[in-house]
Image 1 (cartoon, rainbow, N blue to C red):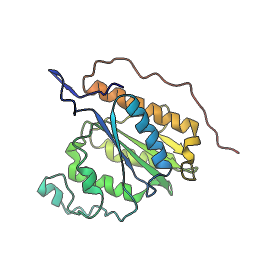
Image 2: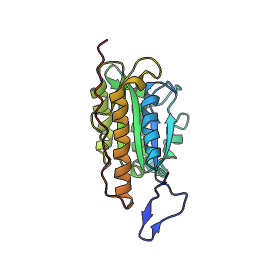
Image 3: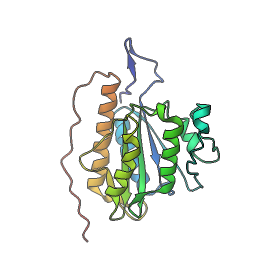
Length: 225
């Protein structure tokens, strides 16, 4: 497998400088359906020659932003609240070239804990995100995924970040743990998203490739049973 490195005017830079995509699992369930969808993205990205890391926000309390402005005064990319996952994620932003945020759907909305993390990350360390591709993924049992997906996109629309799309909205379906793997169209959507992300990153970083991603034959999946 070829690992694709960021390039500059002198060609490839050091071997540790492989392009990397950071995936944030916004579910309290470490290996639930959101993780299943993100894992399909990560596996495909790695097959395309990129490094990946999946980070779980977990099930411990997450603070919301209180607009205190301390992070702006400190200008260190860290939130003043240092007792949850926000700052540990923020420390990974500068070394990452692209991002995928995944969330389960709660009442037609993303997980509130993930929204709190995203809002604080962008406020305290927004410059490290700018001009880097991002994609969002919503996972649900039945309804509300498009509303949640749109909500997740809103914040990144304000950050000069190219948004990576797929053959459909970035949605997967499943209820029981790991059930989303049986959503064939959803998993295909995740793979297409990953191929589009890797193609975009290679374009941005000057890797000599012009070939567009080849799509798979469509696998329409219905859920009446």
